[in-house]
Image (cartoon, rainbow, N blue to C red):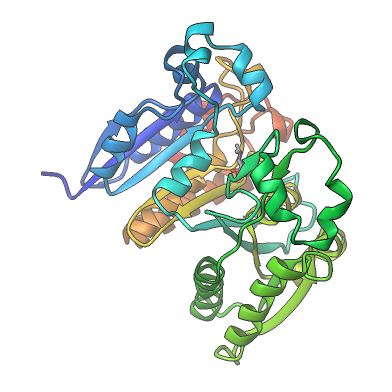
Length: 371
Ligand code: IPM
Ligand code: MG
């Protein structure tokens, strides 16, 4: 039996292409692993009314880690148009399979490093090295939403004085999404961020929130963060409002180090930070729980490029590097990152986002050539 069993979920569109690139590179390593492929994504929504079939969830449970390509996520109204009326009428509703996976497997940390590799012509500056810890299971992504707002809930909410002004609005004219934050989830994401900062001798941890407006949820995480910061005198602790952070990240990204944020804020600032170091072609993420982890590029399935082998696989390759690291194969992870960095620096093989005409798999082969 192989040492590791790794699930591979290519997903939709260019997800399949970048995963192919990752496998070309992984095959070069002496990793004692068995790879098992699974179904996920839009195709299964259209065919089965479920973008994350139960057989896939069961299969993942028997593996040590997962490499994930990309999926198409659409708003409910668009998704429902694309399945047969029978499936629609039997009560299926669309959900984002990657968000579901993160929650189902309690992958509470979404680790998103944004580092400027030397020679990347898209770097906003060359001295950016940010690491974002995005809470990955609740917050604005808790998924507790209503439309129309059930009368019983509306009635309960009227205990809050601010609800009064909605009292006479008809239920079908009110949509409600909740931001649920718990002490447990706030504590564990902050712990991961502070421990990381200490381990890698990072200068600072910044909590990115909006507690001046979101007083209860923002206040909860801020309070926990302030207390935890006292345990880490070796790490500076900074607080930032998310709106101001968006501006400062553009103004002085080099000043920041480890950022920690609630799910939606983390989603937003991580795309912003990704663009500072080359855009989605370079942005990778690790969805990491206590026992299991899923590694993916941050980009989506890019339907317009489907089948063209055009997109930059570096984000996927860097996600693969994160997986090797998480498995404890640090030497392999370092070898892979060094090879990727050489290809970027040399600049001979570049996909369209970098102004070149290389194809997805050309980049994979170039990385193999540097191993
Ligand atoms: C991400 C993506 C997802 C998210 C989408 C595809 C549901 O934007 O991983 O950042 O919102 O988390
Ligand atoms: Mg996102």
